[in-house]
Structure formats: structure tokens, C-alpha cells
Amino acid sequence: MKKKLFATALLLLTTCTSFTGCHYHTRDNTTMIQTKNRESTTNNYIDMNRVTEYSGTDTGLQLYFEDGTGYYLEVPQRQEGITKVYYIYTPEDFEHLSHALENRNGKIIIEVSNGTVLDSEGNGIDILGNYRHYDMEKFSVGDKVQSVFVYNPKTNFIDDILYRTDTLIE
View 1 (cartoon, rainbow, N blue to C red):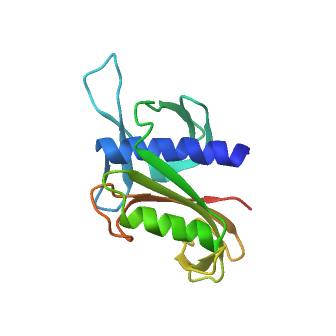
View 2 (cartoon, one colour):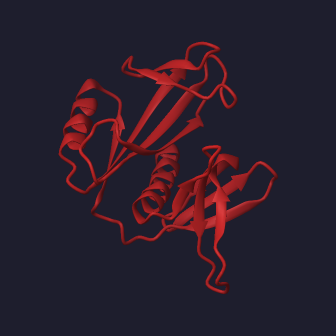
View 3 (tube, rainbow, N blue to C red):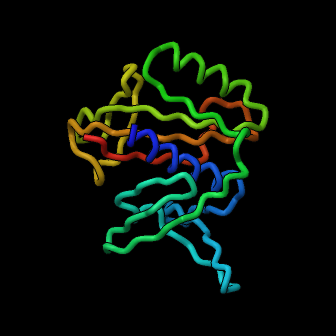
């Protein structure tokens, strides 16, 4: 249950940042998220590739970074109703996700599924046997990984992913 809460909080974070357009990718493909400081007019950014751990609450996400620092990111609650999260455990779950992706009509679809790293090249499979590729700088052979995909609400293409994050679960 705790893992689902954390994943849901992360999903809310990625949903809000993907939908409102306050994230971007740098030339080296680093994902940055813009934060708002009510006391300053300057823009601040979080490098999401430096997040090593996270924990969620009902109103936000506590992020922990490589250097030992942390940041509490408040997640606006106004996105409720336009987001649908699909946890993939069975072929039927995958069928429901596929149907939703092809008919999303502006809704933000989020997929949460688990997989395993199979070899040192980063090849892996999800729990249904579908191919996945993992970053071998973050993971090792045999690692169990939870993947979260946020799909583009503006299209109905099943491979139009705005954001992906992988987290070690075992």
C-alpha cells in the first residue's frame, strides 16, 4: 500500500508538471522541473535525474537528492478528474490501458508497471513479458523495477510518452 501511495504521489507530480508545461529537457536529456517560490521572481529548477528517493503525502512529494539534501514539492490538487492511473498486473489490465490510450481525448493516462532487468545491456521485461529497456547506470541484472509512464493527453498514439521514470523496488 505504501508503494502505491508513493507511486501515486510521483504520478501526481509528473502529471502536474507534464500537463502544465513546467518541465523541460536539457540538451543532455536531463529532466528539469520548474518550481515556484512565492517570495522570489526568479525561476528555480529541480534536476529530476538527481532524485534518489521520494515519499508522498496527500498534498505533495518529498524529494531526496544525491547530495543528501531534500525538497518538498507541493502538488496542486486541481488536476483531479482528468487523470487516470492504470496499474498493470494482468493481460486484462493491459487491455484496459490500451483502450484508454487509444481513446484518451485530453485525459492524462498514467501507466504503472513492474519489470526485471535481464542482462548487462539493459534489456528487460515487464511482468507480462513485454520488452523494456533500463538504464544500466542505475540498475543491475536481476533488479526489480517499477516504471511509471505519463502519456501525452493531446494525442491517442499508444507510444506517445511525455515522461518516464524507473524506480528500484528490489
